[in-house]
Length: 115
Length: 149
Image (cartoon, rainbow over all chains, first blue to last red; front, side, top):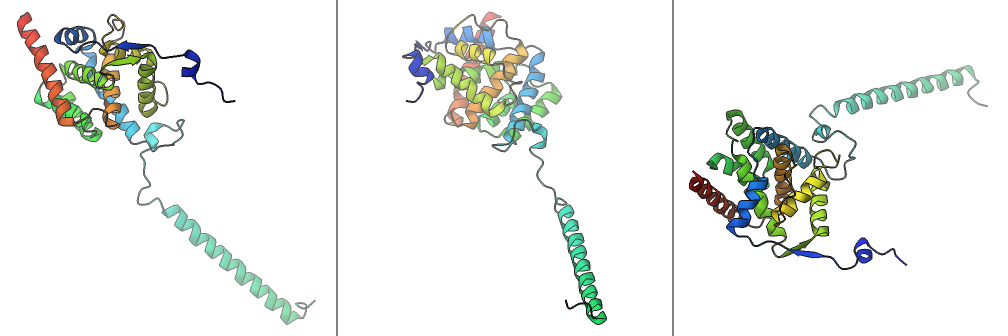
């Protein structure tokens, strides 16, 4: 049997009425939560930077990775290391193939290539 | 009094155009034009939260909203203080006396991030209509300021 959810355990939700949206209510809210001190400018910039950083973060990215790294899309030179590696690997493989072929021919000429 | 440039920053956020939001905000920051932006983002936060729960809400609703915001913008857990954020949401829904100890910078940062989450999820409704509502609230607050002088 599945575990009861939090809401099932706690019973019916207790609802509270939202206050009437009249000028008095708005005035009281303003007195408490409209903050215009000098800190506000920096806070505004901080908040906007936070929003911007999160917007650039792809969904599912591991949260331990610094946010600043998320938006670094692969640049135009991102494929270069792969390309270099691929060319070098092909050259090495071709070199090994040539060396093996020479060795086989040498053995055949010397008569010890057939066993 | 909100400036057209401040409203443009907010509009970019409401549209979910976060690159433009950043660009406009940087330009305003450089010229000191963000002075008074606290009112603009507070009005947007108030309306955005009430749009989610126009009639009623539960503790679970508030927790889930903050958790969803954190899941999108704060996977390190270092950006949004969930206690602060939940109290701010409840304050927008009409509960008073919960937020006096929250530092100004935390308030503004959380308001922007929660609004950005709701905008990104398309939960602010029609951007034009939302901005019109924000302007109405800001006009109301400007009238309060003028009356107080």
